[in-house]
Length: 383
View 1 (tube, rainbow, N blue to C red):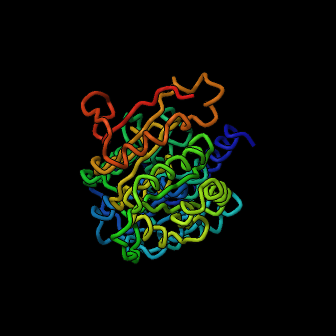
View 2 (view 1 turned 60 degrees about the vertical axis):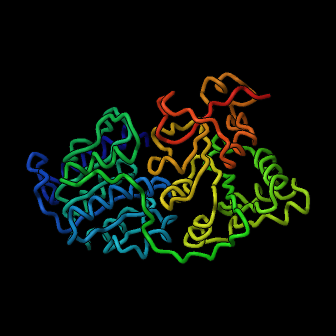
View 3 (view 1 turned 120 degrees about the vertical axis):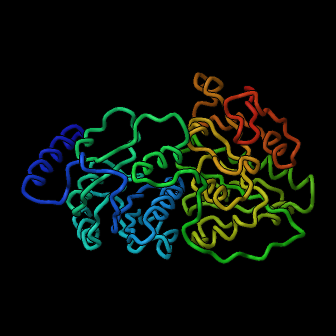
């Protein structure tokens, strides 16, 4: 079924449903003075999206300190939320239509009055919120164009030129939430691992959701060789999901044996709480635009993040700019280049990243619209 027909069908169903049942109220009665005691928050997508939502979640908790908060979360983020003190109830749903009725049943048990859709897939998020008995729904609409379900929303985000975190905070400001704190946080506690003061650990996140967001393995190899030849204290920790094990194999096989012995491979073997403990000990995390980047930012671990297709003004590090360094490849450097169009981050050299790690980078403060994220270099076209 096409998206257009799906929207039309669900809208017709909701028109009939709200005439004979449900709790949805006229959006004109919605205001910031309503004291909600039961709220459901949707964050059903990737790890990075959940981290971007944490400032808004904190703002909601501070606005309604006595309210029961129910989180609708993706199953992949279970270990990052299931013991969080922020939530009274958690419903796991990956927004597959086949699972919508069990999800609605579990949400209804919490008797929510308000639904805050921070990151979820339309139209099933709105449908489930209405059928779960919510009186009001507000939603972060990613597309600046109408998305087809606005008639059921008491409020929703409008076109916004800025960071995703700030857009979500602006959304919840209609509830009367304070929005001055845009720093992310880790929703659960974790056990720190003692740090070896005789080593400097550099974390490598080699994988990403798409190849186009990955720095090539051979560049990571070049960086490892530069680090290991520079100082005996350097150690490298590889992190990532099980599907990234082939990247680890390629990386380790490309290193001399004496260098490979200075690498620890956590890929595919660590739980999310364990990953937090490892990242906590990194001197730097070198990564593309990935979930672990945002974990590191929230934990105040220094990062070097590599961007090409994504806009770091929207998804890059926002808090603690002195800790985070962004290297961005401008689109004009790769869009018409057959060699680099599939993996544009290859234009970033290992020397570029090493300069950030060693603190010998050129500062461009005040010279470009990205000032405030830290230091950035614009990569020349490398062959």
